[in-house]
Length: 151
Image (cartoon, rainbow, N blue to C red; front, top):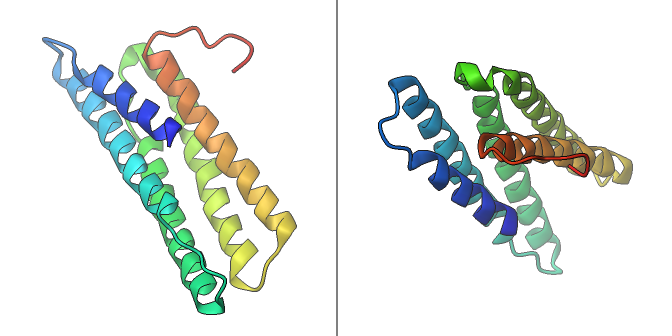
């Protein structure tokens, strides 16, 4: 929840520039759309309710996998954004974020579709975390923050 609020705030910050050139305006619009879409998907994931009943767990799993597929699409769109020249150095990291999210979604499917596979779930979670971390670093750098060694 906190990450989504941060992403939304960052996107709004990026969109408030005055007198932007069309390339930067398009870039800011695409970043904002990504942040908003990821936030909406995150809210859907947070709203999944799991009861102890077998059917409820099955539906919750299906919903989760569907939302992860939506996240994958958004991350792939993000990875294909044409960054303005001053941020070209971030394009490779954006592509990595998309690749990690693709691997995460695929691995989550493998972890849950044919019974439960804990090691596959852990692998999926690691890829998910790597994808999100890259997006956080990109957004921090776009804001002009010093990410330092701790990030």
